[in-house]
Image (tube, rainbow over all chains, first blue to last red; front, side, top):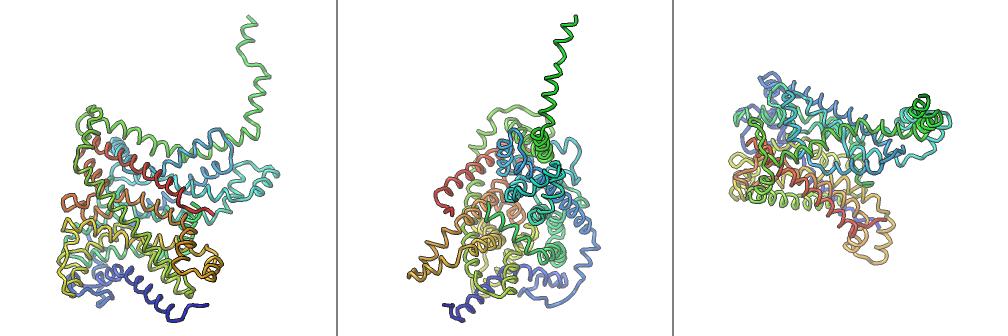
Length: 276
Length: 315
């Protein structure tokens, strides 16, 4: 008994209305960025671009605020964190899933409870130590503490637990050691969970705001998030379209990445939801 | 003389026993195990466990980075309990968390139920994209745009309100509305998350269950509450826990939109900690408040798992 066609259409309309609501701020952002600075506050607001002036984009990229440098900083931090987490988490997850060593269960539980620790507790002492060692205004405090993720270890271990033992047993029969088994057999099978982890930690690293706000004060060393917020404060209320141009540029790569990797992003997220 | 020498060196039997244990496959496996967890655990120890110990010690002192540390015992904790701003911040945080968890989960559920139809692939793709986009865009950028929407004089929302004859609201300037504005923005941002996760859960509910119930004469609401809801309860529980922990720690949204104001009306506990430690240079006091947050979050999470054991249906 299929639902009447009109009902499907009504629902489609409702969902479309919701979806438009979700996208409205982005549409406004892009439209405003394409306006001349003096028109940016003009009401009624336009959600579809009415003019196509790219001057704001040019002034953002060539202005005194180093937006491109901030981009680079964010990329460096994100890439380093993703690479680090992939390595540390997959190694640890394999050990907790498959290798037997004394204290394994206890060590795992201690690690897992780390997921509940808010960064606000650890950041005050870390900040003091980093200052004493002279690491403020560098990217190190943003990267090094984030090279491991308790959640990441949990996630990958869940996956490893589902791999049948046969593979490792046949490897053992052929005389492969633990490390060789890990590299040659387990890792190649783990593409899906590792990409999920990469996307989750990459998305998280890219949007970091609290940590860079605390450690970095120099324009040239800021990440994109902190930089653009400071940019907005610096520009005051005079230059809305320039600020919106900056934000549009920042948002664009995320949208592009999502368009290409949508399936993996959502799969990774639902994997944690259904199994966790 | 020869006897003394003999007693000191381990016998060749003992030596070969130890060697056997270390080079046995069990020994190798254990060694590999420790080696594998070493990078993660060293980092975990250095940057999570150790700082907690230091923070606890800090919380028992007065420290502003410029003058030497002065021991203060539980003075800081006494002040935490007596400080009205701490209570206000916690109250705001709980109100925020509660509103946001309900709002995000309910709306996400509604949208997931609506979308869980046989739309064509392209429509599904577009809908998912539209709803999920705000979730993965960094909060900082979203807050910048929303602060323009919430602007009292030139803001978008107030403009449309005035078009309909209502007068504008001081979304960010009125202490009665500041927290609400943050809540609205947060719900908008995170609906995509619950929608996607719940959708996956919905799609794993076998159609036969629903069809059998409908054939037996169950109404739509009965089907929903008696069959669908229990079957997706693990997913909903996951959403609850995930959103709760994030909401208790909310900072970016509030800091960029209102900085906690006006006054303390939208100050969350993390904003308060940031202010105390990094703006007022009270690192000891700030650590004390942070430790209370750690305890609160642990209690909340344990409570949620307790409740889950009772309410979550496990197939």
